[in-house]
Length: 198
Image (cartoon, rainbow, N blue to C red; front, top):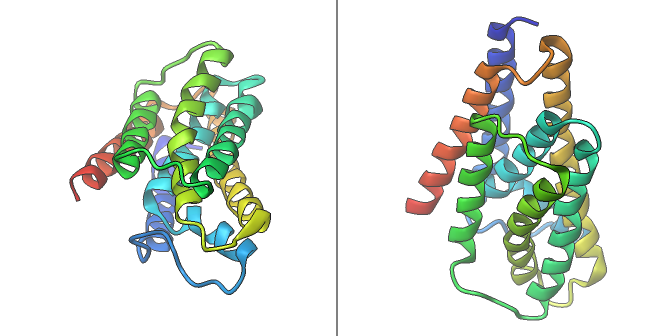
């Protein structure tokens, strides 16, 4: 796969994600069920989509056991934080913190940063706290555990998309191509900054 083909595929994927996520300003829609509502919450918010796909892409770059441990740490911490959000724990500026996680993940990809697995898990786990709090705080009344299963499943799916794309590129190129890292990371950084000032 040439770098030009990678650029086109990645651009198309980002456009599709942005189109799917664009309609949701507050990330809440009436889906007619707690499970569906929970599943829709991450995929209808551009900030969540970018961060979760970025976690998968960065995990692919880290390689080895990080490919499943890093996304898994995000999911676990996010689920716990979601419970805290449902319980009413609401620190200030959660949305700003989420936008900052998009910027940080974009920077990690842009610079093709490598680090030990445990540190990578801690980094994305700290980011996941804010995403989980947002999911919990915006849960419908009496959503129950089905809502939690929904947003966990959607998050895992988005991680899988990023991971799969990253692994595919690395198999063809022998590592995360510089162009893909610059494009993906730079897009996430720019989007995160725009989310903060919007």
